[in-house]
Image 1 (cartoon, helix red, strand yellow):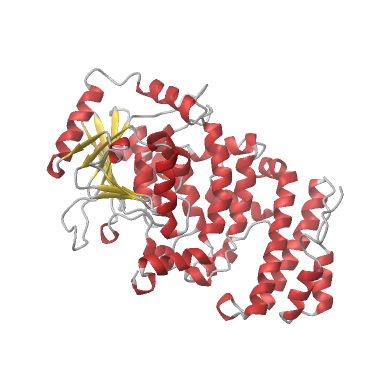
Image 2: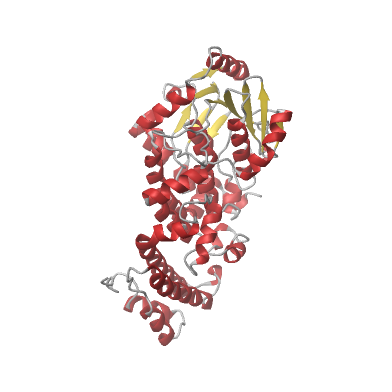
Length: 472
């Protein structure tokens, strides 16, 4: 296979940058010369690529930590990471299915993303190990080197491969091990308190309540697992026919004692470096996609055409606001009841990130132009407005949300919901089949990784949110 010209990646320019940063010319030249020409043989290419990736890591280790780098050292670090990431992408473009087959026992094992990215470090240097990621997690976001971007490159290539990507989507739509372990307890008691979420059966309805009261029910590393467990249990419950998603009562002085739906990603934690890259992928491919598609079974494909999943209609009740991720939930549910004083936003522009699958789903609700205004220009939608009603099915007085949800649930269930799963599946075939979601996530996995570690994210949070003055 013909090698790519060094003029477009490592070469004389890179050598100069490394020398200016104090790396011995001979050492830098030897590393640049070790850039692999892929031969098409998995074992040979993995060995040669690993040598190059690990060599790049050793060079990075010679530089000061990110906060202490001068301009020359920062430029050298950027040149090293550009070269190693380009080599990772080239390797995966050729060998991703071979690697995925090895990691999943030839598609015989389902491995979730949070495990898969670390299993991939079996090829040394391809993705960071847990030991490499751990110290980065102790740093504020602006001081991280962003080694988790390599996880995004890996996941993007897996998801871009039709067979491997579909298998990974299947893995993420299975009930979690925690949900299966606690299922008998929930079925017997009819309610569980999972900390950041509760799940409770009330007759024919099961209610999931999201709780992060100090942070206006924001989403972060402390909430994602509990909410997914609650969603799994709600879907697995054989004694209920429909599910409701609510936000809990909060502590914030402005809303104390009131329910709010969700304020989206916890920006305090984001700025402080307490949210990992994998959080986005777990969330989007996990419980948010489960709201939309239900649960898969190990023995059956989750594809809508031939799948046999476990799903229920979801009704969302919006009190106060659905910001960012909160608004994204609404796009995955079947019916939205909102208070007349509530509003919706997708402030991705001010956060510097991609708003989950909103870019995939929002245009179906509001059209292309309004979707772009919401995502790229920060437009706010009041629920009690013509535009807000494109997402909200019913808008009622703030004190009537509970009663309205009860009425809607009765309307869904009074003649049975036998056809609900079939109708939801048929709608998805027309709007968002699993393969479309897979291809979207292939783009999202890579782009969100770069967004999450971009200097623009820090600048946006400091400019629009006064992040430096916030306390975790």
